Image (cartoon, rainbow, N blue to C red; front, side, top):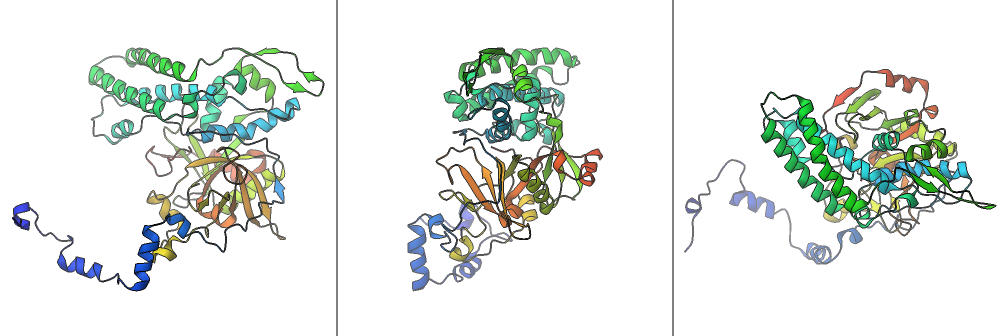
Length: 456
């Protein structure tokens, strides 16, 4: 039995694909011998291999005029803690210099424990703050869709180190769940959504002091603490540590996480760092802040100065020349040749193979969510021409030494323009005129803004 459109309940509407529209579309592709050959090639092969530009492949030498002294490649494994690894990779050379040691690594597991606990607290506190709002309120919807995760940015690390200090890796080593975080995150997210529903059902529209609800929130957080302890271990309040010297092991000394930071990083002042952004969808030379973009309730939100890319480059070059690595973040998946460790706009020629145009600019990619910062790495090197203009840059990554070029990713200056979004620079490398922008009242952006993409 043939069922007509009326029987199926399908009615032709303006904009639908009718016979004439389909015929018009189909006629645009001629099934000639050349196109049949393309179908055979494209449908039977990895598209990325077919579009690899052989005029570019294997032609990057990874040599740089200016390079920061680095300390070995770390590996975040199957976790979204790139921002934490990156921030600590910026700091650990300072620890090694302070103690005159060749190797050192912070415990990311220690800070990760408190990152998830603090994010859970911030989340439930926001649930309490919006408890009387309707379920379809945009902020309430945002909370249910976006609980917590591994991601963060520089201020996330700064908040944790200021509140909880830091410890050597040996004081709280990685566990299976710190290196493979998807199951842990899934459990915590389900628990937090359940807790959010529970608090809203119990206290919505009731005249009860907020402090009463907050006490119940603490009880709910005990479950989160239990989950974290079982999966990540117990964070040390005190620990013993020693290091290798030219004369042999140093005396064993007892520390708290905060006393260790005070001794190992005596000059560290996180407020001395400034985050610089290149977001052409926003007005330049303005101060912005993204609401709820933090992990610690009383901590700092993501606050940044928006500048043209050339301004970021200028300050970054000065930092590298002074042997200071920087936290930086980008859209790492775009035009990445992972085998060679090269990011180049010419790497892959999708448009040429498929016969299409892919020509959105950076502003258009941001506003359509096609591109945004997805990964944080330490910016450690720059190569310049005879006039001092940058041509190539390099990241120290946290994907292990077997990934990329011995653990590093080299990228062109053109790629910087299109896909690098932010760098965190010591204020001493930034000119006075730019630092004046920090005195502005920040323009506050909502947490669902396109720039609210945490580095993972």
